[in-house]
Length: 205
Image 1 (cartoon, rainbow, N blue to C red):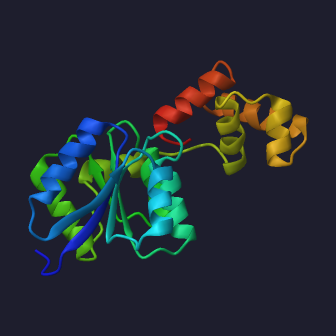
Image 2: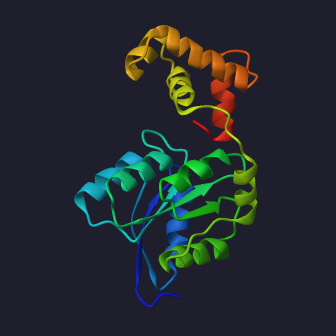
């Protein structure tokens, strides 16, 4: 175990899970939970006003600002904190995206408490933590969508019309329609809503 105390910020939208994790980690002499929040935006507000903790333990899917968006904020701001994400078996696509953002660990929500504590200690010691199951799934997970197709599909999933998507991405409406059509075809979907659903299930959006 580490000789120094490791500070941890917990970000999880389910209050029962958040409180349970905080209580569990607080039982360790060398781990201190500095605060806990329900979404990434609250965590960003904290980071703007306080020194960065050693580790941020965050869920991926949250309202307002997701765990991946929080990881991007940390990467872009070159903050001296290590990001650990909690995920599920059903979202292998998240792993590749998160690794590119410098995330140091992935903890399955199905994991037991001993694994969680060991993972936190390992990340604190400078190691990268990813379960074998998730690693295999990430390697087998091939996203056929281009970045532009994903961008258009993500905006479409938020309810934006073609004209609004074109304006947001600084593209012509025809180009946006082509991107959406390609995404629908690649995912063997019936329409843009179905394509967005499939992509979200895979963790690509």
